[in-house]
Image 1 (cartoon, rainbow, N blue to C red):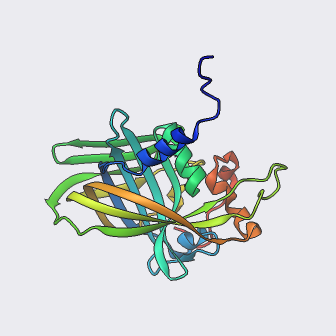
Image 2: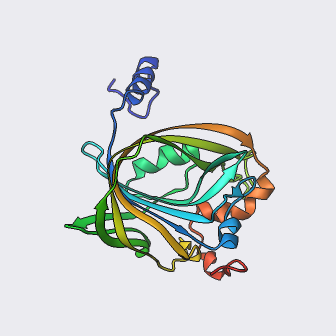
Image 3: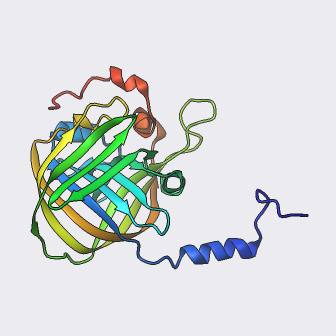
Length: 265
């Protein structure tokens, strides 16, 4: 009988897949990172417990083209600075990806808030433009010009916070207690340039990052980076406390009825 591809894999095939994934070479990306300071109350309002606001109300957008062999990927993230149990990191609100393959592992393994979207990274001479778009709306755009070459930084370790969960079958709450994941990334940079420009946030009922307005632009850089990552579950969290933030993970058209947090810009 011909092989049935939806049939069970052999133990040898499963082991071979694990071995192959463990020896992946460095995969480099070219991307724009913009960091700005927003309204403290607004940043605090998007953090589910037990995450706490960081010392500065920072927002970070990363927009990259990843050079996967034969399968180039656009990848983005909009995140706010946060802390948990003495660990400083970032809490991503939305992570647009250009391919379905990039969604499944991150969402199902780590709990990343990945969604299909359009990712643009363009450079023409010194002029740079990068954008994240979904549903036809470029809800984040970074634009400017390269102004100087920066020293290549030492390798760094960064932490992202994710909530991994499954909504309940009956539509009420969760199937089991959600877990909080610390995802640690080791990042290496081989080229880094400063960009002088600005960040444009556009209204979208599906991706309402426009609430996180730019009060003070901290920096914009263009760089070539590679990272690896490893996640671990640090604790189970109260599902009732997380439930009011569930809409962050999904496209909810009723978000258009949401008012901005009190004190937001």
